[in-house]
Image 1: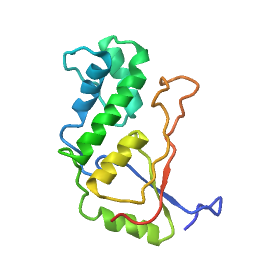
Image 2 (image 1 turned 60 degrees about the horizontal axis):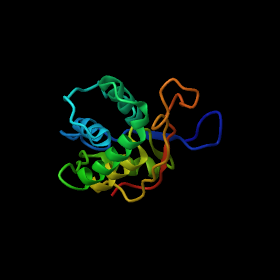
Image 3 (image 1 turned 135 degrees about the vertical axis):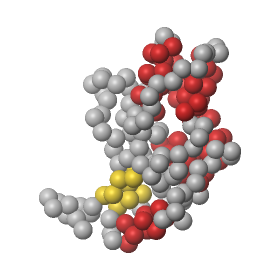
Image 4 (image 1 turned 120 degrees about the vertical axis):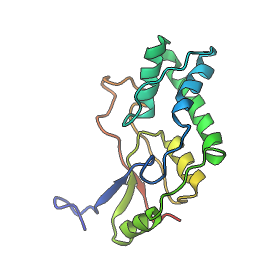
Length: 169
């Protein structure tokens, strides 16, 4: 099947958390800990509503919540990605829901393109998927607002899908 306006194949957009992988019980606390590590101070545990937001948005809002300087954003993101690598290949390894590998394979067999549309940074999406053993063919690309303040001219209104050819294992 192709897009009616062009000859491009249909793209099926998948989210990572709660779709391709079951949600993890400890993920939300990682933002708080990453900010503590980047700021070099212990902070009272406060949280922002994270559902449906990008990693970048959550970091910006949490920095605002604590009154911390925006200049910490890149350091927080770096801490978060490092912690995610350890978490998702270790104790926080995610599970693939029953039926997901078959769905992803069916999409590919139809000639459609499996793509990721997620608020995770490319590295965090890769760590989660690889750690769960869900695919070796998933390639992650870029997404907006990782280091760009929401509402600025450089923030894209939608995340770009990332091509994910082939099947999940």
